[in-house]
Length: 273
Length: 321
Image (cartoon, rainbow over all chains, first blue to last red; front, side, top):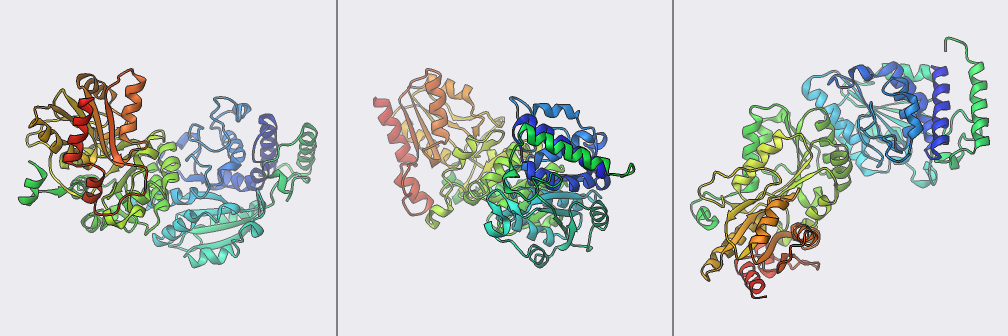
């Protein structure tokens, strides 16, 4: 899984560099979460994507689409080379998720939309007695969107314990630290008071992520919230926690440096990781 | 049967009542029909639906953005979802959800705007929806429909359940009836309905304004003027074939709508006619771009000439040109 994440990071950077566009920092902060979701948690893949019983993943922080596109390619939804068209004229691979791309569940990008849609999708499972679960990834910067809190109420009201929201808590947004832009802390107490069951996790620790998702629902009859503590730009030392990499694109030199850093990291990973 | 007669005989029903009754009928045999409300089950006449089919009713409280987002999620999982809320809130506050979660994502939600236009009358502009046609016309992948009478309402609901497309349905709450006593019309989205044929002036109306258009046509007939009245229930896609036919056949065209004169039915018709070289004396009757006069729905209609007399006079003045 560690190796996969390194490969994912290399591809994220490759295609962002190639497209000369993308949300680098946020894609790097959430990629380990997506790795665990798609390779350990979700029952979805190209073979059953039309099945009504598949688990759903809805990416509310749509701007980190490069992370999603790279993982979906790895899952076999399309060849990763398709991403050479990222953000190019008439490409389906645009700067936010769309259903024109195989494997994408919902068109997102405007913030505060993923949670309400996920609530509806989870509610449908309850109505039909289906066992699928719904996962949605939110950025911490999108929490001030009121629609999140409307949906949080509904999720608890309908006891949607088949719903899991994950917050990619990298603590930075385009303007600066989320705590300075609009302080949403304490996030856990807020969601708990709304009737959710909340867990904190290191969003780059695969074992912790696996254990956390395996424990879902954290409380029967309650929706689950995972606050994943992450590092914006994770894996590339000069990008980590540096604001400008929110949607910064590396220069050729920076790109090469980043690749060598990832290649070096790969050398240190034991074969079975 | 005229609406006045229907009211006298106790047979007039608001389109909204017909909507609710039809949905109950259909839900009896279709467990996938789901209604989502935002504390709007009373205004939407959906109390009985919720009582009869509690498992098919989702209440989200007063939270319109969430209403539409949740509806989109339900629709994506195969539910035939009616998201019901006053049109004024639904198509303004939740517009981004309609644009992205329904239309752009192609989640086939039936977005139902109730008490539309100036139905709420004296409650004022916060409760009026005079912009919904305009904003939704500019959004790709959503059908926009305003049924005129009980017949069109019933047909529209039945079709909305069947088609797997995003759709906006707009209802007022005024008691209505059927525009035609005998009726074997085929109702289709995107196909306007000729209620009275004629060749002097074409009156193209939509929603609750079709009835006063019909009254105006009767008044004009006393002056030997043959008015043609169209119920253009579908604002988008507009029935341009019918529009072309009636505009070419008649000497003048009047459009009537319970909507701003900006961006609604009238401008849609004007745009088509001008771009297709059809030039006839033309007038859009609707609510002008100003602070809307206060009063009941009928007061507002009367003030802006959206009534029998106003429509007839507008037609006469165009015919004199």
